[in-house]
Image (cartoon, rainbow, N blue to C red; front, side):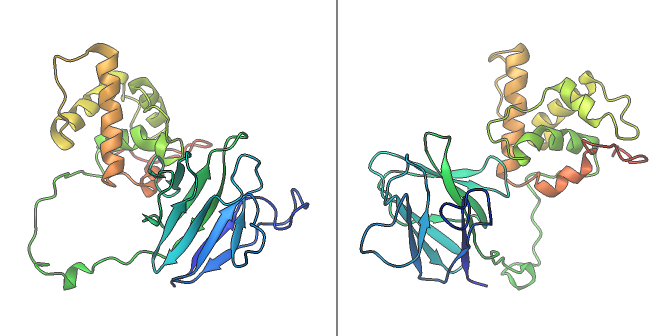
Amino acid sequence: METIIVQPSGPSRPGAAGTGAPDLLRLEPGDTAEFGRDRPGGRTGPFVALRDPGVSRRAGLLEAARDYWRLSNFSAGTAYVVENMENGGEYLTVAPGRLGAPVPFEFSRVVLPAPDGGAGFTVFAPQHAYLDERDAPGADERDAHPFALDVTAKYFLVLVALCEPRLRGVPDGAPPGAGDIARRLSPLDGSGGLTRSAVNYHIDYLARSKLPLDLDEHAGGGAGRTGAKRARLASLALRFGLVREEHLALLPSRRQPAPGVRVPR
């Protein structure tokens, strides 16, 4: 599959507010589609309408290119944001006047600043291709992994809880505190003894041994330094894909704790 699918926001027909679903626009490799508030007179071809008075009539251009796509920003002074909807907090910015910026995400949300908080559309790119390690040069050579994490260990649960807000789509959310993490993990069988001090121990262990951080022991201090450590651990784990959305299944349900679930030791 090499089709890029664009899903505009809003109803499928102008004037049918609140009804129907937006029409899907399909772009084959090499196809382009402009987007903006209104199609300029005399122009034909695919167009993504963003019916917001804060959006320029001719705001930009999409171009499909096999398993990725490119975005052009026609604005003279406004940047656009492309959010990776499969990895909370990951995004790229397309500067004003930038042409043909490549977007590597498979599932994206393009956001344009607007008075009502932001207009935009969703883009689905084909699934990316990956190298088969069996056919790769040197496939029999085994290198030590720079981040050796045991997903069955309790410190990994703490790390997942640290990353949870951003994995659930809160890109600017601060990592939870030690007390918050202890309460979050308390429904799991065997976690009754996981105190705030124990959580802080696991955070220190991660920062010291598993995901070594270059933290100045004499800089800052107290809660501020601890908060910075939690934020940097979460950022590092998400940036390198060490904690992913599927790892959220290790955490207890927010609605009903699953009985009998055991905590990794």
